[in-house]
Each structure stands twice: as C-alpha cells, then as structure tokens.
Length: 254
Image (cartoon, one colour):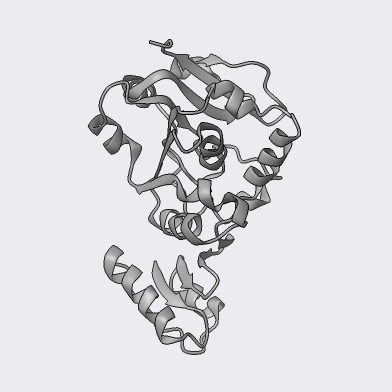
C-alpha cells in the first residue's frame, strides 16, 4: 500500500498526504503526472489524497466515504418505514452501540442517528485503508445534514478480537457484527471496492463469547439469509429477506 496525491497538488495537499504517511507508516509516492493505472501496476492498494477527499483505489475500483444506503434508510425512517437493523438491535435514544465491523459505517450512522447525542457509537475497523478513508470521510464529507451524527461516531482502527477483551463487562447495550459475506450479494456494487481491502475471517463461537461479555442487552449478527445461526449459538430474529438475516444472543435488560 502507498499514498499519493491527486495530479497537480498544492503544498497543503502534499503535507496532508505526508502526515498520513508518517502517522501510519505508509510509503508516500509523489504523484507527478503518473496515471492511477501505472501506480496500481506496482502497488495493489493506492490511497489518493485530493482536495475533495481521501480515497482508496484497488483492482475492485475506488473506495470513498458516502452515506449511501444509510441516507436512503434514514429517509425511509422519516417516512415511517421500519428498519430491520434498528428493530433487531432495539436501539433507543441514549443507548451505546459497538460496531465490531465498521466497513462503510452505514449501520453505525443509522445507529448514531437513533441513539442521538446522548448515546454512544464506537466502530472498529481492522483494515487500515478502509479505516483511513472512513475516518476522513466521517469528519469532512457527505451531505451536511448527516455530518453531525457522522462526526459523533468514534471510529477506531483495530481488530475486535484484540479490543473486546480490553473493554469492561456490560459496557455497551448492543454489540454488532456485519462480517464480509463468504458468498457476496452480487447486486451490492457499492461493496465491490471494499471486498479486496476487507478481512474475510468468519465469526466463531469464541467471538460471540467475547461480545457477550461486553454486551448489556444483546449481541446481533447480520449474515446471508441461508446462514445457520445456530452454529454461533444465535437465534434468528424475525423474518429474513431474500438476501440477509439477523441472529441474536439476548442478554436481558439488566
């Protein structure tokens, strides 16, 4: 992985890219007039700092932050349409939510809009390029109406398997997993640039046990509709749709 700038960068842009490179030990390569194609021939992952945003380019395409489906879901919520993720998690204002697989941060944004300023959303992302792109995007990009909640998400770079044991017991109301599906939803074109960067390790019962120690109310897992949740000790929640389903380990309200 390398980091570069857009073509014809100004000094501020080069300094910003250099700061990211130094902070995260990523080689900085001056762009000059090189094409992205030539850079990708030498490095499989290319971060690009531009005046608009920080993005990441791979053979799968360009990854950048945008509320995307979260914006659609929040619009539907305002129209009175229920959101299965929120219903399954049972989040209310003031709750605390731990997203162990942040990805594009769509679920974290929907959760933050639900729990409000008095609630907490902590999102963990193991992949460094995904983390960097989302961290910058949450701070600076996306529609103005979502920037307050987006900036309220605490995004942390790290593996939940290392971070969960460090958290106090029952410190979050809901602990959530949306792992990269082993069998992808082919229609989800927005996820294509994410897949080459994501860590695709399947969840195990030991992972659920780590989460259950930290969860006060429940552990929730999103998976494909045909997934056997019993292998993780979870109970299917409600009706699945054609593509996805949720499994839950309830801890009670105490």
